[in-house]
Every structure is written in structure tokens, then in C-alpha cells.
Image (cartoon, rainbow, N blue to C red):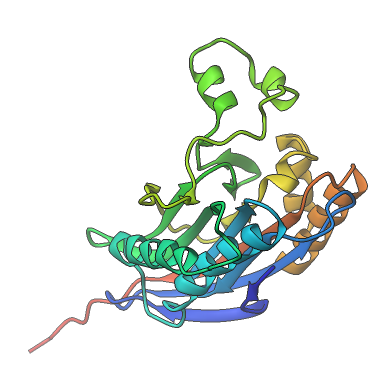
Length: 268
């Protein structure tokens, strides 16, 4: 388990187009009640926030998730991040996993999901990325939206209309994913851009949270937590209290303010 970055109650990022974005965030991880080791890792360091859920056995899973967040964290402190930066970090992480002699000999991998501040066209945006079944959610005006699509067997069954979303939660193959970072394969993330909005709240989490809380429950705690720190604490405590069958990792990011650059007028 690797944690990079601390919570921040107010931090301003100036994007390349001079847009000022003020954020607040918090993050936490818990081993849960049934696992001996926490194989989750996270990076919470503007302009990038990500969660990785390791697989392949205790040492290998921890090694894989740590490799991913460590490489992503190399872009921390920058004004913005693009998809090429994320692609490059994930490729380097796979190379790092391959060097884990004695730890990852039988193969290791990890999910990864997150958001990064960037500029798409001329507009400031969150770049949402995902590989596996960790998730990103957006809360705006009390409405909760899942921004990522799981790479999993049950998601494929849901998409094909063979099972319902409710049946997917208890399906015997609910833990089987179809895409990961590692296992000696090139990482292929899905990307999505969403506009920055003042007042929006972003949740990045491992499936240890979504196994224990319904979307209704997630929405409840995101709304009731006045600060990112309160929301993170309530979400983790609820997931562990509901069974804690897996490691639980949660990152909550608030967009407090978005100020676009003013256009000066020359009166001559």
C-alpha cells in the first residue's frame, strides 16, 4: 500500500490558458476486515488524483499498485496533464513491474482510475481515465453520475442485456476484470473529458467501496460530508462497517472555484 499526497483544504492550480482552478481534497485507505494486506495505493497530488487496486497476490499486488501511482505522481505539481503523460506513466509502470524479480514472477497487475486537470481544445477540463473496475463518480447539484465503465465480465453481461445491474452485484464472477495494468501487456486506458464546474465533487475509489455501498449510499455520504475530509471518512467507515470484504480506498476532490482569464481592453 502506497499513499502519495496529503489532503488539502485549498489549493489553486493555474492552467496553461491562465484559468485559475481552486481545489480541496482528501484521501484515505483501509485494509478492511477480511484481507491481511492492503494492496490498494493512491496519489492525491494536484493536478492528478488516482487509485490503483493491485492483483496477483499480496506482495505482487502491492508492488503493482505502488508502481502505477509512483509513476503517475511524477507529474504532480505541474500546471496540467494530458493523455500522453498518463499513457507514458502507465507504460513505465508496466516496465517497473517486469523488474520485480522474485515478487512478480507469476505476473502482477492492478486497476487504475482517476482524474487529471487538463485543457481540451480551449476549455479547462477533467481528464477521466480508467483501466479495470475501480471507478470515478461526479456529484453536481445533488445528482451522482458514474463517469467510468468497468472492464469486467459482469459489465459485459450487463451491456449484452444478459443480467441486470442488481444481478451483477452478486454474480459469481463479479471480481473478474477484463483489462488491467501489468501482466506483461500494454496498458490501454479509456479516456473521457468532462468540463470543470464550480461546486462539483469528484470521487475516485477502488471496488472495495462499491462492493459495500450502493450508488444511493455513495450519494448520501458525498452530500452529507461538508468537506472532502468528512466525506472520505464517512465513506470508508460505512464500507468497512457494511462488511469490509476488500481494501477500501477513497479520494474526494472539490472544485471550489474556476476563474477564467479576463480579456483586457485597450481604450487607446
